[in-house]
Length: 285
Image (tube, rainbow, N blue to C red):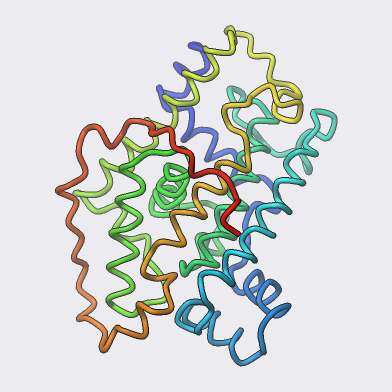
């Protein structure tokens, strides 16, 4: 394991993320997903407004969004549990030699449910049409994955960005602020915190330099990254944000100036530790 981390410059997570975004089917179109998911429950004019603005601004309540989110989580959970070493990489994906294929496939599914959830709860498209992802996109994915892994700094950063966008009456949070000088170092440390969690769990499993990962994710061998609890943790955080709250928009009399105003002074050293909580169940539906 130490060899794997050393080859990835100490940040295993970022290397896995770069590999996972190359997996076919990992990118979810916000417009297509919202249209398909919402059309089953709402009239066309409301669906159109949800796509143009966001679901909460269109009047879709958190309770209604939670039902759809749960369905999406169940769907992706069923898919990820079907991962098999025999399937390999479709299309002969060029992988980084240090990253096991099934671990990358697993995180591709993490990214799929991540996108579905943030689109439901008010965020914009993560990916552009470009094949290569930029630093802003990497930062955005890192931030949300940090929430999934219980990094408190990620929770705070997501809340601040979401609140800023809601006050400005935007449908989204632009990724641009995530590479600004005062935020980018936080994102980098969130990535390192995720890597630390992964390393600790792998070592706890007695994993040696020659990592027996083939089939491990599908068989439950890497139980530290069980899929559904991660997805539920993100869902539970997203549903508390202003941009997912119908009542917030009802009370919002007018939009702000659009100026970015994010105070990160309360993000402290301890916020980069992993917080174990009991917020990963889906019993609130």
